Length: 150
Image (tube, rainbow, N blue to C red; front, top):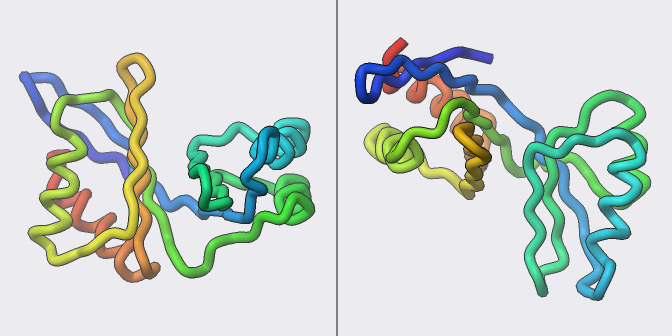
């Protein structure tokens, strides 16, 4: 995990950049299909920082899955750790233009990302970038550290 700062409007804003394992699995596209997956996860104490489920596609993506007990429940509900992608999560105070700036520095570094999920709650934001490889995620973490002032 690394801490980076972005100075905007004379305010130092600290961010956390960390690797996240994404887990995924099929979801039946029917009323209650997603609940069938989420209820066992909630009962096992999951607090999901990332959840993506799309109508019609029947695929659920979640993070984080921590500890032996949660891994067991995730597997029991049909989820598996994604080996075809690696993710970086950036969390901190929401600042206008942060997502655009991060996308720009990745583009300037010649790094392509697979997906981006972002959310703002109150004054805090969380961005989860998914990459096709661990190497792309490592490069991106270095780019974020260099691009955002410490």
